[in-house]
Image 1 (tube, rainbow, N blue to C red):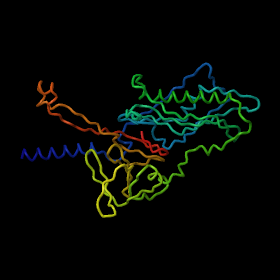
Image 2: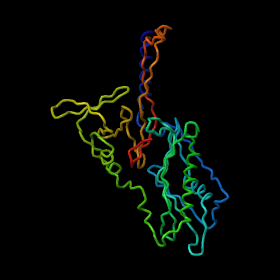
Image 3: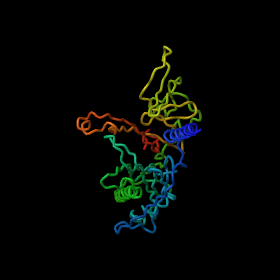
Image 4: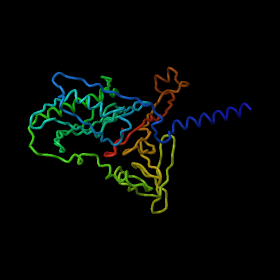
Length: 339
């Protein structure tokens, strides 16, 4: 009876462990929602005119969140109003008798705060991705002012890379400086633009439009974006640390293929992260997934053979273990990068 109890206990423990190490599809309910606020910093040389006005438009692919940190995801409850107040404290809107009330339109296209922004040296740092276009509105027409398209990487020594309010404030301050500079430049009169041409063109992306997902392999990001997979006849062999894709070649033999961006089983789509594939979950006009960026290898000495002589001569037996570090990621629908 005791043996049976131990076997059942071990089975349930291993089953629970397997579920933890092999997470299911991404879902925001797995994380805690944290609200972020950015307080405007008023400067003496930036005084908002009472007759001026600032409008913020949110053109992001998804407005659900602005980033992750460990078990939390961040959001700004009223992002347009908060950014309006912040920019209003920094932008100098001087009116004249000809133009009357000046109106600035800020169009936010990207805002993503992440603790997993990978660098060329394969190091992960926290940072923020920001893209916005700014216009001056004159009656019902728009004059293009400037753009701020930037990526700020946090410095480990400064320990602010995971401080979302500070990084967002830096982007807002830089935006205000560019707007103020543009407002004081001489512009060609009557040079108006169509503001709709600056919007993200989600309606032109096939994977966002096609209801039927075709089965097959995405050899690259373009295959995924255009919903044009290849090699529909494939099989996947899943392991604890790696997944392997096999296709049937012309001779009828099963052949292992590498360097595959992802695949679709006809119903769900998967992306390669590390050496495994994880289900992509669409939220508005982009995708999220819960994946592993890499496999970390740890080598340490076996305590049973770690005698002084063995340690000195490096002849003690080594034990090697691998560890998958899982993180939530969001895809940039226009580049295929994920953070």
